[in-house]
Length: 382
Ligand SMILES: *Cc1c(COP(=O)(O)O)cnc(C)c1O
Image (cartoon, rainbow, N blue to C red; front, top):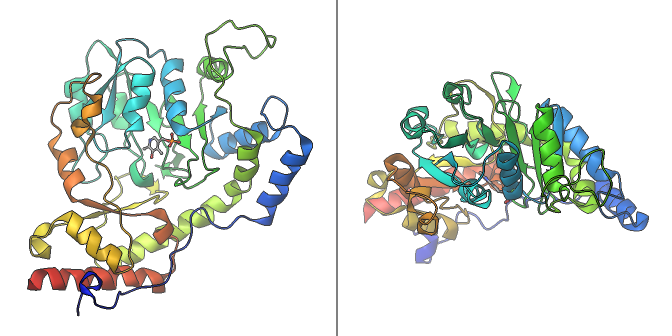
């Protein structure tokens, strides 16, 4: 069969489910309620508080603070745990660049540690080699919605900030992501499993950390103090009532959406796709993405970029994903950027199936498999 990129018929012409899903009536109603109320900011309205409390409760954490985005959530969590100038924070090589740039924002140095080959999560052994007197925090990332092994990082006795930007609703040994470390950060950016276009939220069980988070996100004010009293240095990083209005109804939809993606990943695995496994101890992944291993040898030696281009022409838009942070030259002034062979190999070989595709039903998902086989056969023939 001729590949679509060579003039053949594409496997699929139909669209994939949109993400975010179409707005619900409840979202429209809440949004209009905020608009008409004139209380658009969190300090005048009630929706941000309502959402923060509901989300925090769903995670099983004691305290939560909603902010403008996930990057800022990480920055605030680090600051609230005492990370500052010339401190070091260990982050995994295979993650979104914000895991490292949030450390830079806090004035500290990101130390990039390699990941384990099976899950691409922070490798506890690599962390052990990089721990030093300046290490003030470790930031495991729940990559693709699969909970990282946070217990294995506890042995180092350093505060842990969970980057849970991709892991809404995930659990490890039955415990929700967000309660595994000292603070955890979620994102509500457009691509995430819950979204308001932008947004972020930090949860913690530590009241002192909460008080600092609250002050930092609210111009240095204190919970009990007045509007023009600023016992701390802080910034206006508050979420708006509009964001909260869009987010509130999504909490109830999350479980079913996660279940849909779980079924999709199970189906694709059964059909032979080499999707990375979840770490041992995972009781629920949010399956934000499916990370697929691409083996050039099985495709006539053709590159990952060639594969993605051919699949996209077949109507299956795949993503190339991250490059290892050890190769992000922009970080060089802030980090030593030692080689991370596993993270670098992942950047060269991992292909992403994004969330919107995972929301499709089995008939649609079968197109991914059909196109993969078609491209594989065509590449191997040449
Ligand atoms: C999305 C994301 C962030 C940053 O969140 P924003 O809301 O986009 O600032 C941080 N870490 C990871 C792993 C992410 O996927």
